[in-house]
Structure formats: C-alpha cells, structure tokens
Length: 272
Image (cartoon, rainbow, N blue to C red; front, side, top):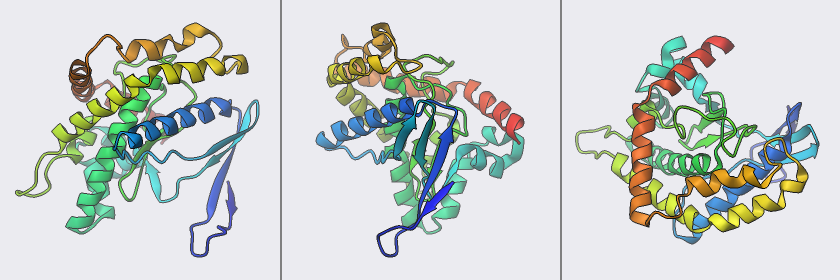
C-alpha cells in the first residue's frame, strides 16, 4: 500500500494499492463504464451515489488502485455477525450500518444511501455481466454506500446461479426500524427498474465503446461476439414497463436463492 498526504488541508490521506498479476486494464474499463452509467442516471435526474473508485493501469499486468477509506468488505461484516455462518444472518448489514450510524436520523440517511447505491450496482453488474462476486469483492462504507471492487471477469464470462448479487441481508436493510417506519423495498425495486430502462436506452453507446476496445485484446474482450451479452440482457424488444417488471422479478429471484449465501460461506471458510 502507498499512502500520500492529501494536498487539501484536513482531507483524508490518499491511499493506493499497487496491484500486480492481474490485467488492471479490464478493471479500468469496467469502472469507466460504471462512471458513464452514473452520468446517464444523473442526466435523468437520478442520484444513485455510485462514486466508483479510481484505477490506473501502468502495464499489461500492473496498476494502481484507489483504496476507499472507512469501508469494509461484506465478508468482514458477515464474520462480525456470525463467524463462518454469518452469511446466513439476515440482520448483519443492518446491524453494521446501525453500529456506525447511532442516531435515528443518521441511520435513515445511511439506509437511503445504501438503497440508492445498491440499486445502481445491481443494474450495473447485471448489464456488464460482472463475475466473481463473492463477499470479499463487495464493500460498504460506514456511511452506508454499497459498492463492488475487483472486476477481473465481465461480459458474462463467469456465470452464476443468480444474475447479480441481492441477498436477504441486503433486503433486510430496507425493512422499517420503527413501528412508524415504512418498508423501502418497493422503492428499491422501482428505482432499479428506472435505472435499468435508462441504461437500455443507451445500449448502443455502451456497445460502441466496447467495440473500440477490442484491439486492446483484454482477457475477456477480444471479439465482437464478446459484447453480445450486453445486447441480450438489455432486452431491447421489451417496453419500459415490461423491463421494469422483469428486473423486479430478477431481484426476487436473487433474494430467494440460497446459492450466493452458500458461496459466501465457503469463501469465508477458505479465507479465515
């Protein structure tokens, strides 16, 4: 790790990881596409609080990656709540967010940030076909922002039993914390559908940008056929209403599947 003093007085130090052994160019491209999606959503009046970290490739198998301070992996949160079987604890995420946002107002703000960023990353990782989504590749900041890291597999090259990560502990965060509160899950599903439709309208831009990168010969982007994943998942023949309903159904499928929780448990066992 490299730590550099922040030029801004009072700002947090800038912490960077020097990464060797992976083609960081693919991470850079994925993060740029996520940043582009964030701009699409903002132009449509939606702030999904993506804030992707920065990444620079310095060679074919080396690069610099920004460390997001004040954040932990969801694996660490799982282990905090229940050790090896923590991935099956529905309350783990809500408990951790609550521990870092003690009063009711800050907790409500954190849940809102979690909801928006979770919706954004569910859509982005589904459209880009991001693979290898175990609980050490997903993080949450103390303020509640949810985000993904390490994009070594994309465009559907590593398929899972679920189209993206949305587990019961994520759903639990949206449940009301008081008798007067309301369930935010319907709002989450609505936001996902709206964000998905925005990306669908810009499918040709994403495809064009990926076509331009084929000559770079990245590990999982070498041929025109590699881009077919984005065309397929954006379901261009669907109406906006049908596409929103389709994505809402995907969130339910992900939440009701136990495979991701089993995968996370094995990952904790392997790396404890």
